[in-house]
Length: 230
Image (cartoon, rainbow, N blue to C red):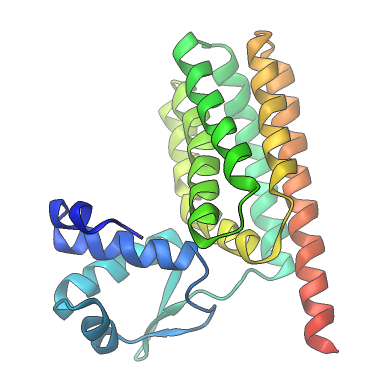
């Protein structure tokens, strides 16, 4: 959760956005849960206007959705089909990003990537809402840093355009997948390819990483579906 002194420095709508986003990414609000503006106003001790602004921004992340005449609710978890389709898109975009970034390697880029990987490895061993939030923040930064390193605004914008749905994927994975260490290992394999100045190797490792993420997520979704049917 955003620290109180940080909240005071942020515009109110921004602070509420960060607080709600943290709650969503920590799994503190259930998929499908109604987000009543009046209730949120009381809970967060804020007027309804900045809450509406925050919810509108959250809608663009894919974490909440707006229903006509009903207001906002927490987005449901991805179906197996939706998970597969999202990963199809990522597998098209992100290996290309990884290759282009590999043509522009700098010491600063390598240092930034390594920082995110080491953070993943540290927090993966913890099991708390705060550690999950930190894990996904570093996962997000790893992929975003590669996108920025491409020096290609079209690739970077393509990645950003699915960013909200990737956040929704991360929420699904947060609730279902426990194999964070495997993801950290896959990130490190991409990093090691960059260390060797192997752009194609980085692209290949990125594709393997995304295929692995898809396999793990689909396995979890099927397990949840079986449990629900019993």
